[in-house]
Image (tube, rainbow, N blue to C red; front, side):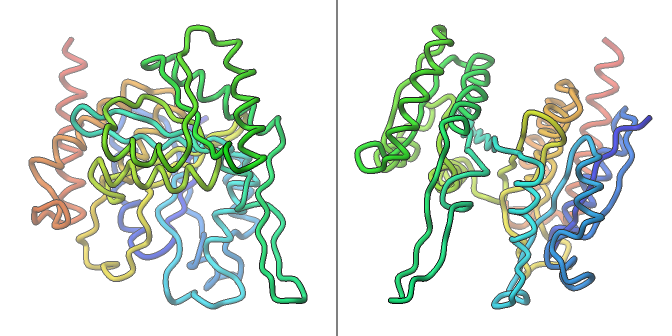
Amino acid sequence: MPDVVACLPGDGIGPEVLDQAVRVLGALPLDVEIVRLPFGGAAIDETGDPLPPETLAACRAARGVLLGAVGGPRWDGGAVRPEQGLIGLRKALDVYANLRPARAGEIDLVIVRELVGGLYYGARGTRDDGTVFDTCEYHPSQVERIARRAFALAGSRGGELVSVDKANVLETSRMWRRVVDEVAAAHPGIHVRHALVDSFAMEIVTSPERIDVVVTENTFGDILSDIAAAVTGGLGLAASASLGDDGPGIFEPVHGSAPDIAGASIANPSAMLRSVALLLEHGLGRLDLAEALDAAVDTVLVARPTRDAGGSATTGEFGDAVLAELEQALLTAEAR
């Protein structure tokens, strides 16, 4: 039976960059079946629901989910927003660990962001006096599982872990720090330190090459991972993997739907292709192919960049160049 990959093109440039991802998957020595499904704003237009039941069911049954992008101004102000589909999908698949690699030159770090708790999922509302509130809540078990994931990742890399919080102010952060210390006791080979989010943001900017693995809660992780992406080339090049303990992960570029360039064939598919590499590694168990794809993307970013990266290649031409690099890499590997 082939491995099913659920593909959610979404909105804006999402379908364009996802097309390149599908081309790459089709060129690799894999037995996969691609299933395209409506999601986000496109699904609102089609069904009134950003996450139709049929889409969710297909995602649950897949080995991995590839997502293009969601959102755009045409859905702003509506009662139903495309982003609700993304939050709902993350929660339904319980993909609590969001991995955000950031690589460039001597910089090679990964931020492990807790993805299904905190402010984005806590109680919210408006009181009678007009006060608006959003609640940040975490249970120790949520912190324990993301910490274990981060320690395991650090053990497979440089053995260094930074846990980021705001323990000088927040009760949730004080609990977070305590639980991380408890998990650390079971990983004596990992050097762990704690950092406050504000000073650590400066550390990412001033000395990112010193950082190996970072673990933090949802909101802090959202902000810090974007800073790390900016330091290593920008959101247009950043990929992500959202993983749980069971079931499929979600693999997606960090950039938005860029509706201003949708349909112009100038979108840079690098982040989408790097997300495919994360799917290969974490979803399909093919680290060899993941490394080959990452290397191909790195080469083409220099040799045949798109307009945003200082070149003139179209989205499809960039994909052509990556496929050519991959073909050569696979032939070389076969000859060894």
